[in-house]
Length: 281
Length: 240
Ligand SMILES: Nc1ncnc2c1ncn2[C@@H]1O[C@H](COP(=O)(O)OP(=O)(O)OP(=O)(O)O)[C@@H](O)[C@H]1O
Ligand SMILES: [Mg+2]
Figure 1 (cartoon, rainbow over the protein chains, first blue to last red):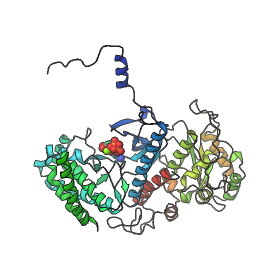
Figure 2 (spheres, each protein chain N blue to C red):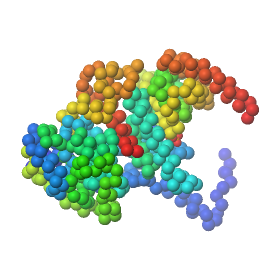
Figure 3 (cartoon, chains in turn purple, cyan):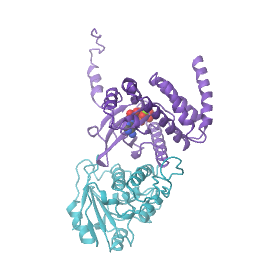
Figure 4 (cartoon, rainbow over the protein chains, first blue to last red):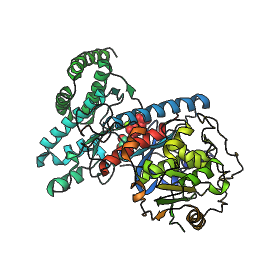
């Protein structure tokens, strides 16, 4: 590889650029400070850290929505508060009803943070990637199939209690189990596990739904069908081989609660509309 | 002398939380009267141990009380009344004291003392604060958080004072707080937080928010853990 052209202009702005690279972009709300936090992800909306809470052995996730500098501060505060509170309320409702979601352990809407139970394991996205890389030849097919069934039932259960997720992607579905060694990859880990099996296998893990930032309380079949449609697209985008797996997600979903079959029929309309829209656009 | 266990909550390590547990208490009426009379010597959260499910249940209220006090958004007069208030699922401070505070007949008592710079006067404000909306803001600024803690509260002072005034058996709290939930009346806790009666079996088809239902097994560890995780959420979003 030839050395890239130096993109950094050598001028007075240089040390400003350096600063934004190293210094934290946001000051954290009380009582948190960076020294006790480990960054997990940084999405467009939220900063996600791991830390401890209440006791030094309780590992949790801190989700912080920093102020948006381009919004009016008063409006920004109000919007952040409304969204975070909606997220927390839906999570508590789900937890009450026995839907597998992270518990809400603490939070402050005025300041924009939420503390959630840490879900040990990985995202479905990571698990599918790992599987595609490593485990397929080791006879993991059946396990993945079973996992898809659990995904379908988890979404069905969520819909059954009257919640629509709003952003169902393979990153917003987690699988409880041993954490992959680094981040979401985990192909190597999966291979190791397939060889010396008696250890708990993440493919056997229970599905936990996360990221309820766009969730709403609704029992409408249209919104439920859109949830499935979004998930279907996410599967197709996650891995080409994952697309056919989605059939099993839908099959399990269809049997998971009383109104599910109607939703599946509605999904066909939603797909048609989706295709038309993409032909137009 | 009473046996004190001191907790340091992550992120609020600078504010020690001293906790004592008593069984067979015979003078709860006296203790409660000190609160009603706002005797500054008795600035504690005195809780009926039957309403504390797990150590984490209590520490959640403690964290929330510290947090609202230190960020000047407390809804009650003192950090200790704030703790009692934070345990309750709604905004009625009087009701919070009736459900979670000690009664004249309480026999198992948990006393919490927060190591805060100024705890203000005693006094639980029972009945006086109605919905507890405005309560004192607790002297903005003058408690100078951040410049170190000037407080006379120590584990030793709490141990001596409670040892002298609580008539009962001091029970050592394990390092993880384990036995704080020992005298919990799980059914009463379910009722206050509206968690259902726990009689619905666990698993599929479970309806109507029956949290941690375990086919009649009462007070089982998994059941409590599941109840706890819902209760923490309820306490966190209450009043918002
Ligand atoms: N409770 C949790 N336990 C473990 N990991 C989590 C948890 N919550 C989030 N994560 C990890 O952090 C990532 C981002 O979290 P999340 O999806 O909630 O935030 P986000 O997508 O940035 O938020 P939003 O879409 O609401 O702006 C997840 O994909 C997951 O890997
Ligand atoms: Mg997400």
